[in-house]
Structure formats: C-alpha cells, structure tokens
Length: 292
Image (tube, rainbow, N blue to C red; front, side, top):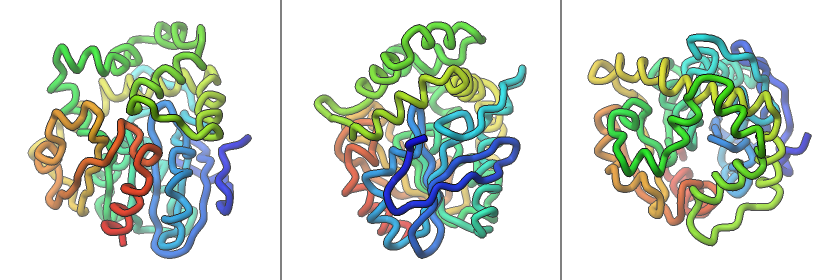
C-alpha cells in the first residue's frame, strides 16, 4: 500500500465516478493539496507537517494515479478531463465535511485546481498553482524549444496503445528518467517518495490512465480553456509559484496568469519543476503567508 505520511489518516473517499485514496490530517481551515505527473500525494511529504499545524490537509492521489480508482478511458477523453477530476475533489472535500476550501496543485494537480476554481467558484476560497501555465496557453505557445523540453505532452497524447506500449517496456526507467530530467541538476528525491512514484506508475492501469490525462489535455481541457479565454476568470486570489531553474520562468508566468485570474501574485523558488520537494521551506513560507 505505502503512500503514507506519519500523522495522517488514510481514507477511501467517494469521488465523482472514481474512488479516491487520500491522506487527511492537521487542524484548522481546509487545504486540498493535489500532486502531478508521474507522482503521488507523497510529493507533499516535505511540507505536510509544517502546514498541518495551521491547516486541515487533504492529500489525495488523483484519479488514475497512485492508489485511487482508474476508470477506463473513452473516446472523448472526458473521463480524465480536469473538469471530471475537479468534480472528484468537490466530492472528496464534501465527504470530509468541507463545502468551501483552499486548494494548491502542482503540475497536473494545478490544472485540476484551476479548472476547479473556474467551474466551482463558490467552493474555492484561495488557489495556488505550482510550475504551470494554463493548458490552452501551453499548447498555443508551443514552439521548437517547447517541443523538445516538453515532448511528453505530444507523446502521451498519441492514441492508445502507442505510448502505453512504449512506456510499458520499462516503466521504472521512464518514471525515474522523467523525474530526474525535470528536477534541478544534483537534486536527490526522498527515497520513500521516489519508491512510491515508481511502484505506482508501473501499474499498467496507471500508465493508461496517465496517458488519458494528457489526451484530455490536448482535447477536452484545451477546448474548455479556449471557451473560457477572455470570458471568465478565476475569482479566488491566486498564488503562482515556479521553479527558478526550470523552463517555465522563460514564459513570464505572472503576466500569463493575469489574463486568467483577477487577483494574482507569485514568485520563483529555488530548484527545478518539483517545488514542494526541491524548495520545501520556500513553499511552506509562501503557503503560510498566502493561505493563512
């Protein structure tokens, strides 16, 4: 099973069409923490205890990831669209007794978080996104440099079973390679967390589900973003953090997010893509200041 952080209770909670496996603990106002690809809730291990002194944390594995349910994909890819994954989190937080909550998401979890804030403004009090820009913006700005650095977006979005077959030949290698290539040079992942990422990712159902996540990014997620572009904005205050040593900094993330939200602040933190693991002290400080 694994995927445990000392002091937090494991709960199996009803999502919206998928059972969600989550860790819950702490005290204070609710804060939902959402991980990204190819990881699990263990990305929050280095920041969880400090945040739990001020907040009640809910740390799920996203649908398709970790120990959560992995429903089969379908032709339109909506099963792994961020609207569906956001509805999972509404159900999870209600099952925990919270109608209104703050949310922070890294990578794919950040995409769930901002779609959640757009679709359910009454539920989201504050939102933080870590090392992302909106999905439609990423695709619209894709160029030669982006294509090489972010090749996996196009690869994982290819029709099944192409990426599943390629990754399935050696999923542990692919997972470790991906993690290392997105982190700052020399960064070493926590061994327990890394072991959890590799073990969970190696499940063929997870490989398929995570490919469906990216297929949804190319199709339904991009379409929803384009429908919202210039029409509605994230109403909740938005914190944007990014790895100062990662490629996102070149895009000017604050300027981009100001087109998508009414109240935006943020800054870079040391390291690469994995802010909660590479810069835990800075993320804790930022979260306590923003959410507190």
